Length: 369
Image (cartoon, rainbow, N blue to C red; front, side, top):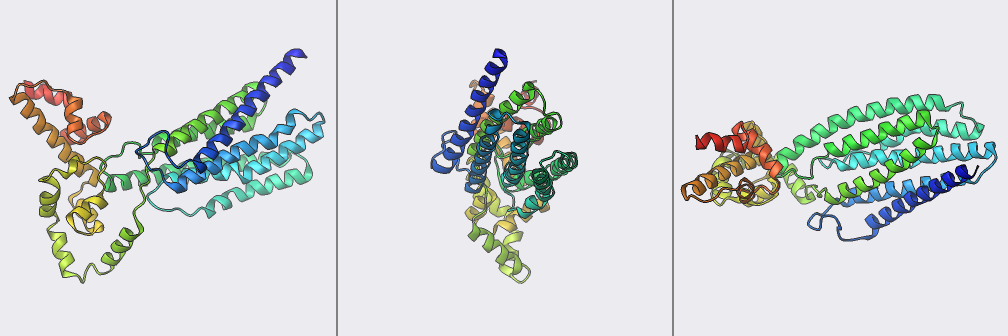
């Protein structure tokens, strides 16, 4: 008896700690203006607010389940559990899906389908509370599982589209890719589904709290390191106007036919590609042409904007290497990669192998031979 009371007390303390942690994380994202994790990153405000709402839903979810620790009547415990499940279906689950969608910044996706997806689950929860019975839960669980499978399939497709959009618009993809985020969140969702279907024993209870802690920490890091990638409204409007008059504008046609020489003059010769995180929009403004024309130019060349910039950087690395060898200077791959515009060494390795067909080390060994 004493051991059971002690275990319950420890769990309540841990449970309360997770509640406070979620509440603090929510307030931090809502109230703090700066960025504690990456001072040079400006995260998207929309994502920051939705993640704050999601953290608040975690805190509220813990709050409305808290009375179960102090109720003695099985009838009261069942009602508290059913009401908590219904409130989770109205807050925690839809907000988790919204956070996944808002991480993708290639376009603004409508959020009303999330409400439509959750409607059958909420209806099942309402029936359960009204009847004070778990009889409707098996059907709800089956629908929940099917919804999770459909959501994962959709997110895989959407993330691939997002990846293509990144490569067409940004030279540096460090911390912009979101595959890792979705893999982690999908794993957490799977564990939660397992917990829902078993939902017995202290191991699962502690496991769920650990998952909440991991989720809070990871999402905090993700929202603080993911840059705001939205295209300014005035730039997007200019592109729409230019596209509408594209066929009738002889000057625009002339510019599109001369994009290659313009890139040579304004990007390659002044080594603009060495600028970290230069976007296709910034390059188009530097050249003085419409962004959509520049994107179409790369598409006609069969390459992405990211591949174009990194190809120039790799060639710059090759030139720096030959200069260092000719002057009998010590060669540091990391230093030369940084001087060539690569902030991340892993990004350099990937770009070099894609451009040269081998790693930088292998290429240097071949040159030495």
